[in-house]
Length: 230
Length: 278
Image (tube, rainbow over all chains, first blue to last red; front, side, top):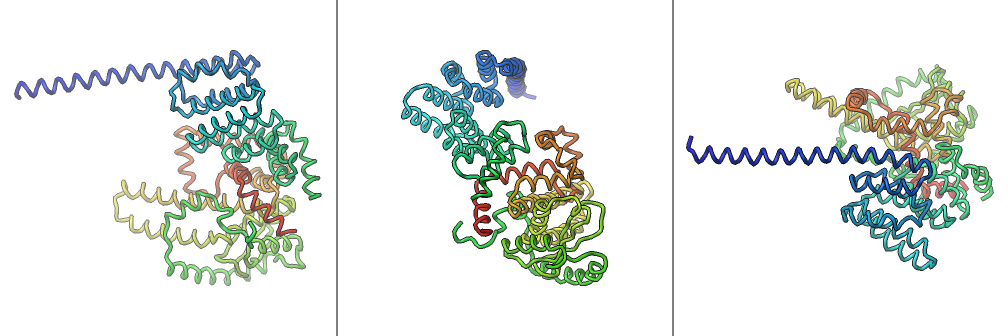
């Protein structure tokens, strides 16, 4: 075999070996990060369970830095900020470190913008921030993620006793989160308050089947009475 | 829905049924042949049904008859005949190709003994769904096509024939199971009571009204999630089982029913139904 060919083959093999080594190192780093993320997620979960929202927010944010695709962290951050919207600014520096075009980054940016607007006093600022941020976020997301966003947003509105807005978001969101008992209960209660007893009854019935301990389930009888009187 | 007169197939058909069936073509001659054979089979069985079962009529089990006629009015179909059969297994089934007198629904006595009238309304609605959607016709047609394909495949070596036949059978049974989701949805639309529709599913899964009323729904639905996330070996087992079973798993059925009830379009359909009933 000519010397040229041998050296070409040797060069090719060297390149391949280098690529493979790089790939293995990258994979090992990824595995390490995923393991670390899982460990931190566990810590975050227990902090959230114990009501230490400050600590839970830090840990979930750290998980996302390690693994931006960790969807449980996103939904947990939603829950934390729904309870305490004033904590939203703490998330901003983390978001700057996440991949800008990732669906989760967009979702969380929208949430932070919304929570910041919520803590401001002006209603106009709230609705403008809400409109621009959530429309921008949901437009760029897959249907399922957009649906989840709407459900979570609906829950935030419900807790703030904005029943019309809550029903609007939950009606859309619940199509992608159909076995979320709390969402059904909140939607049922919101629809009942708006004088739609039939639809309210269906959602309260589903909620009562999924989780009879939810406080809104007590409205089931009222919904039945209203539906029969219509 | 201002101009709506009857419930259309598209109002309740599960997306998977539509997409799966779209892959299978129809043959008009075969369809006519199946209808003729089916008609002869019905005539042969009529004596047995009249002799061994109780036929529902206006003056025979009037509540069942009223449910049937009101459902058929909403669907815009001729009411089929309902027979009550003395049977200890809770079940109901439909036989017949199109909505006419020859088509019949059989309700087992144990089911009637156990289910509430609202649950029966959902179950009858489910069976009517098979008639309205021509499921039996399509199913026979697909089985004929499958039989034809299998005999063609017989020329191939086993290594090719078995996976091809298995995938065709899996697809066929997937269609059959998807039809059940559609009919569950129609059962709910017709009884207009999500609790009754879900409890009817649970009754058939748990086999007892007492147990069905005690089922923890959240735990039951977790079974559906676990089935979705099953490990590879379990999935392989399910695939082999799926080749045989004609009905989807209970937890999946309940989950799909709740999903259907949560749709905005379903709410519009139920509003239209209430208007019609009024």
